Amino acid sequence: MAGVTPTMGRRKLGGVLTALREGAKLTGDQAAKLANFSTGKLSRLETGHNVVYPKDVRALLDAYATPATVRDQVLRLAELAEQPGWWQEFGDVLPMDFDLYLSVEEAAASLLVFETSVVLGLLQTEDYARTWLRAEDPGIPNADLERFVKLRMTRQRLLGRESGGLTLWAIFDEAVLRRKVGGPEIMRAQLGHLLTMSEQSNITIQVLPFEVGAHVAASGSFTLVEFEQPTDPEIGYVDCAAGNVYAEKPAQVRRLKTNFHHLTSLALPPQKSLSFIRKAQKELT
Image (cartoon, rainbow, N blue to C red; front, top):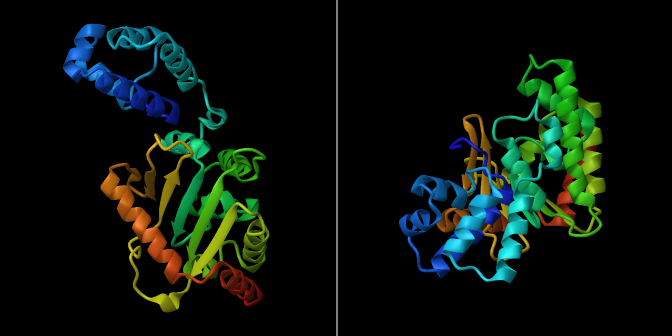
């Protein structure tokens, strides 16, 4: 059980169970004893690292003397926590623990993204995505590659949801625009796609030009995930060769948010950024 991926549903349920325990003024040891759990099992439930069984949730609700109206809401949340996400269809090609990020992205209200070397997956064209993924893994079988491209394209529906659509604010280092992924034709189409997507009211794109020099995020790309409910704390995400890193401590999130807002002031304003992209597109040969 210790290796179970903490999906967003499990994380949300875990936060609610923690709040109920604290509201009942019980320590982890006390609550575990009342529910006939091990302390480790309770900890895994509260952090989203345990498969959710209704009987376990009921035991905790009994231990916390939870009112009936609240019980029903929590049990419904427990039921939703174990429903498979759309990405499970691609489980055979998903990178390790990437299902967690997809569940977080699915639940997000907004993403604040800084990219240093590649166009954000949510804004990639098929040809750009295919070329980049092939470069990352030259030995990937063609069938798996196409499945991965389809996964990436399916993710993009988040930007077009009619209700509760995702808001995206992306800042691209100039290197992202200058790197010829797949050659001039593919890159020209990719830059054109950025211009088209920027016309959506929920998407803001800025460019951080080389002339800015050193800056607060020179060490690498990052994503800050924000949620609609204030009870769901923001999450920082960094994708690196050693694996996915999630920054959840308040101090970590504050640092990322401060860095992002600092970058917005350093980067070209949105309209000038689009002019910069058009210029880069015309200069492709």
